[in-house]
Image: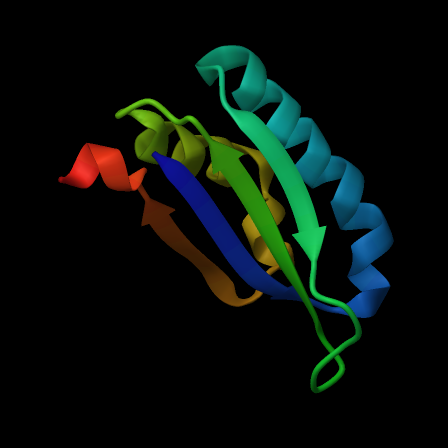
Length: 95
């Protein structure tokens, strides 16, 4: 499974938030074997940046682990309007 987590970030919070998210992703990669990426939509919309965390190759218990890790890290407080998670599977696994 692949997890895509997107949220809005105030530009003045971006510099402090990026290393915290990257640290979280490194911890999850080490503990759950996922590949990670941190992306940002170009430009801003309504004065906000849109960020996306990507976790690929996640095991079946990853949703709970991600939720706990985010809660413990405190990064959710920096996401204006909350974090939104989409989960995708390889097509071959669905048919």
